[in-house]
Length: 246
Image 1 (tube, helix red, strand yellow):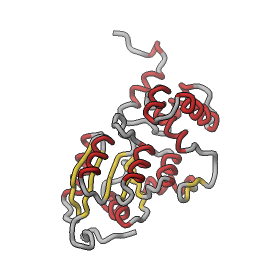
Image 2 (cartoon, rainbow, N blue to C red):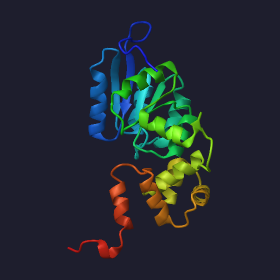
Image 3 (cartoon, rainbow, N blue to C red):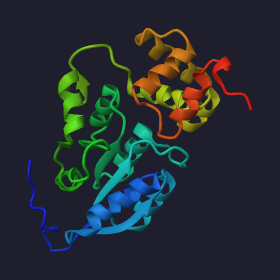
Image 4 (spheres, rainbow, N blue to C red):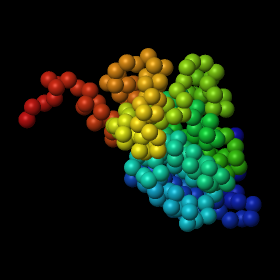
């Protein structure tokens, strides 16, 4: 799929973009990639869902380019955030950025109507095309994401084979393996503790996992954790005898 990269909106104005990522270096790279292109106007940037939603409420935005995992914001992150953006700002194009290679993450985004997904493992050059696709309401997946879609037979947000996690189960697992307690997840997702616990257990049954420690290992292996949390979780999994003594 190709778009005229030197063409702004039909009225001649540039495409108004807000970029959100909680990693300063990544955010700087994203800004640099688009700032030199005359068809784009970087209206604002944010490091959390709080700043992103505030920016959308204050400014007229055409396209949002946002990280999938941005813990700490008032409006959450992941599917919860993108669902909110789709509901409250239906005319804004969405581009999701992610380091996660879990098929259910990609499936859930597509099921939410987020059709432009870029892997952070791919070159930034795909970002421009994704922004144009989002503006036009088209689908665009960077090569790494497209490979996941093809490998797992994902079509239109549905998987053609295998037992996958539901959107709610996936979010509970992602937050749990990122270090949140059941109570914290319930507060974050605005669900009761019993519901969150049931969804966690349901996910573990589907994954044939019995112990929390194995669920954490699964989350690390499947890259469901946020960068920076993974090292902390790996340390928790180490036996006490392997921890250096001071």
